[in-house]
Length: 334
Image (spheres, rainbow, N blue to C red):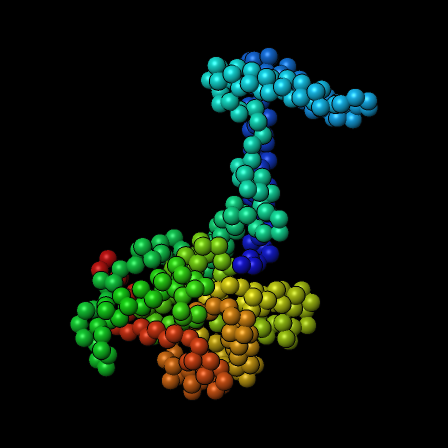
């Protein structure tokens, strides 16, 4: 689950800001309590002093330091008990003066050893969804808002299922794919069909759910993706080349890539090669990909190299969308 650096940086910054905000609030509360209850300020000074007493007792030469250490510890416990009692008597929680972390697992560092803590992972997921929302309208696009009732339940020419029954079937596959991401039997999906049938909507639903589960997700259109591959290869501007390299690294390395509108790009020999590299590299790395396209599988065979078409047909679960344009139907019903 490798988040792209920009997402991780923003999440870490938010974690630091939250920690600083809690520290300021704790300092404010401590000053308020000390002003109203001076005895607590004195107790805390004594408690800080017991630490140095314990160290001094443990280093004292001659004789057994254990009794001295035990006496200091007992004094410490008595002060803590008095402190808690005074706080509770005055309407404060017993731990009101303690600097307690929001996350006890990582103590607000974001890491448990070399592993990312769940608290930081949640912030990464939020930042990733914010990033995706710049390209996808994730405001209302979720599996919960999907409705099959715009699709006709009448037979559709040349198909065994009605558009509604077909969409209910596709919905269940996409829902399971997202909720069981990484373990679902189908690693990759190919959503194919005419415009306005819900391919982008369900792609956005998958992106949201997989992101919320803590995986790295990158969404982009075929035109933008292949433009970045071309910039990396042919641009003479160092800044543009560096940026393109970062982008292509994201496409190749993320847990889930959603490539939208395959077939809208100008299919040059270079694009043919880039598509093969993208598809094959992700398959070899066992990373998941969702591709949406207005092209049918037959049209994919005719448009792209045989190697690429073979991988798309053999390694992707093809989900054909058919029916009337849902966008137009919704407008008519408004």
